[in-house]
Image 1 (spheres, helix red, strand yellow):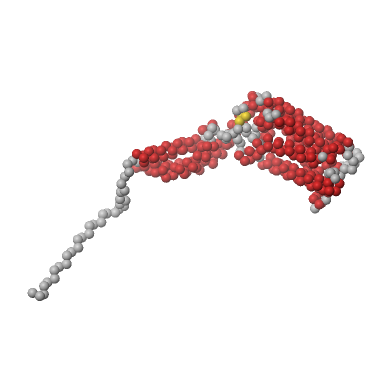
Image 2 (cartoon, helix red, strand yellow):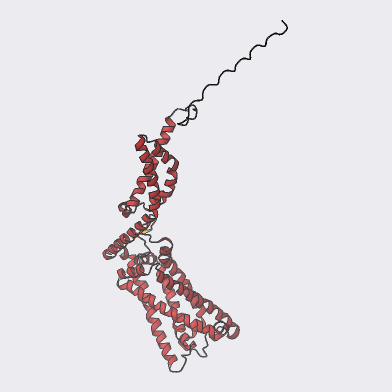
Amino acid sequence: MWLTCSSIGRKFVMAITGICLVLFVTFHCVMNAVALIWPGAYNQVCQFLGANWYALIASAGLALLFIIHIIYALWLTVKNRKARGTDRYAVTAHAPGVEWSSKNMLVLGIVVLAFLVVHLIQFWAKMQLVELCHGTLSVLPETAAVNGIPADPVFGTIMLQIAFSQWWTPVVYIIGFVALWFHMNHGFWSMFQTIGWNGRTWLPRLKKIALWWTSIVVGLFIAQAIVFTVKANSNYYTTNPTLLQQYAEINDEYANTYVQNLAEAARPAVEQFMSGYQRAAQISQMTGDDMYLKQFIQNEGNIHLQALRPFAEKTEGVAAAANNQVLALIPQIIGLIETTQAEIAAEEAAAPAAEPQAAPLPVDATPAAPAAPAAEAPAQPNTNE
């Protein structure tokens, strides 16, 4: 296949994936600009994307583009070094302004990749990945908090607060952005040259477009990093009244959804306990003896505790759970079982050791009649007399 077997095919793949990545970087820059101008809207964008199916498909496609781009870059570098030294693209003459970057595209790409890993750890791993694996964190007991604000994965501004409050973050980002400028500036016009736009008229135009496009995008990225750093160190994202109100509203929304889903999952376990308990309670009421209720708790209590305790742990500290009929029953059921078990244990400890008794007779059984004494054999007559 010419896309893999020929040098032109491999460069064509690099060009196509490069175009897609340039468009993504531009989109990412615009999205960050929303955080710069209107932080509340940035949180809404994060909430809209999140771990929804369309965002996951886009993330998977983007990851595939990065992987293909990296693999083909390494492949081309190895092939080019064997054939023509370190030249990566089919360029016969280099402009002075891009000479260094054209010869160091692989090194620049590695720096950009390292920066990307840091960026993914600080944002993607705490946002989309967490939401995909665990759902919203705002209603979970183990939620991390920043100045009292839950670090929910849909709160992009809280992630900015966490990342840019550290002194080294802007340093790493600016280094990454500078490497991105060199890498993207050269790659932008080189990918068009690869697909055939290499005439004397269009190539100079493409170089100017690349210079302006890359400079604007990277310049905005650097400005955003500086502003995010200033705001994070002044705790803007955790003290702004508008953002605090938005955090509360989103938390309430997610808490209600979380509670409803948890209640549906807990319903079978609650209904199973209530069915057995009500049956034992009816028998105890008819007989006037609570022995049947205690027997039910003694025989099945631990089974129900094992089923219900995980739900109780997940609703601990969740205010909305108290207003849900199913989840509100769980602490009461657990308390009833534990109290009854304690009473049974106390009664068994206080009762004296009883002697074993004979098994009770069946209701319809009657005592057996005593056996008749054996009759004595009559005396034999004496025939010798």
